[in-house]
Image (tube, rainbow over all chains, first blue to last red; front, side):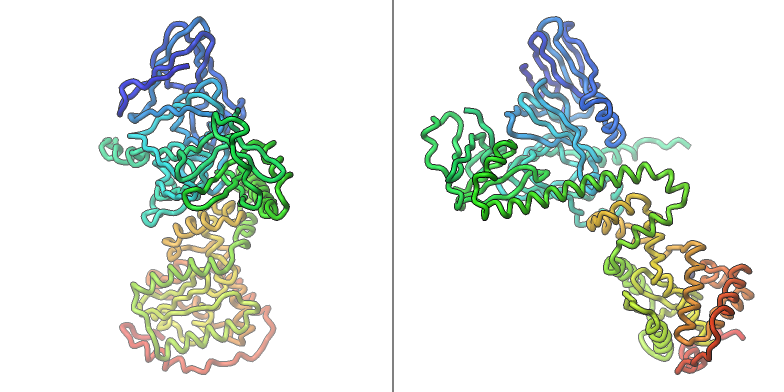
Length: 227
Length: 377
Ligand SMILES: [Zn+2]
């Protein structure tokens, strides 16, 4: 499998080349176009219960789609729903990443995706829902963000504080605590805004330069309210 | 050679350097990439290592050695490798680790319990709503230490007083303190230290915040015809505090999330939740059952303090014959016929005793309040 980011920037797309018989897991709805040799298999990652609980508890899409080049080699074009950058991580089998539910775009066949329950308070306060994705294995992991994607490198014991709603993914070697932001947290308690994650290295954290919740609130003011 | 661990350090990439770790009898052999098996240098001896559990879920074994820019941190997550390390390392190195492992298991158990509780709670939600959530609420409220409650009440109390004109001294303050003193002496094992403020205002009301913060308005003191009447109101209010009615309401308002958070002792979560309702503490309304409970326990407390319990009934009775619209305390404590009957029944059931009068003279107290409003007969 070979993947390449087209039109890097705000409106990128990923071209994935698949050898005959090869598959890729993609977020449902991510496929833009494909060769006629590629078929879509809707498979429930983590079994029916896993998919159902993900759906119920994180509101995320029920399925990942499996795209298979079943009738010969071919290519697939994938794009996220929101404007923002795409980044491709090459998993080496050692590094594992936790990915916030909207951050996953696609992954190679050998990439393992698990829904992981967070501790209750993290889920309650964190704003990413009670489930996050734990991604391990080898091969390409394709993430998307809202806005630009920024990587923060953390040396052992180095700390960094990130607003929850800007989180995309972080390596499993980091540890993190959810903390209350200094102010303005009362009004936004339910949305999870106003909470921050204190990360502690080693590892990396990928963050997005725009906050989807705030953007939604900003947009809403221009939508006329029907009487 | 297959890498089986990640090595971190100041000069290594933040995603770690893949390395091959092997456990020997004397220490840890760490080799990077394509270095030949026999050129990895000597093993790092066990006595140079520090060990702890790390990573997001504390499920990785973190081994650290060296100082400054030469410091190395290796994350092991291969179970076989971790087992080998624990078997070979001297006990004093792994002792902390075993303790940490126990803690991690505990945390995991707790997390599992949390989810079980959460799942159970979600499943039981319908049942709870159906049966009324009083039992669940009581269970959660029992788990809140008075110290947290005090913090919460105190914040609201101080905020409130900042916006009010507080009577600092004089006969009214002395009288109110006397009353609270006499009452609180008769509360066995009282976890609260009551703090009372007299606030200059024509509002005919008094209230108590969780944790024992009591506010009496001069408007109420002007309407009262004796210290016993004020004592009746205060005893009722103090019993709202003692029975933790405020917390019960808060937990009810916040719902299941609060219950679960409290039961799990999740301080961070609870403070967030409680702070959020702190804003509404002052407008908290008690339920009818709580009012009845405060009435009954309030009367008993008056009796123990040898204060005539009839004062409380007189006060509410008389006020309700007056212009109800202007008497705030009646809006939260309406004197219905059933309430009056219950209060009288309760007083009649108490053993007879001679009440002891207060040391202050009520007319003097009221005189000191000054008057924008004359005392009505
Ligand atoms: Zn009351």
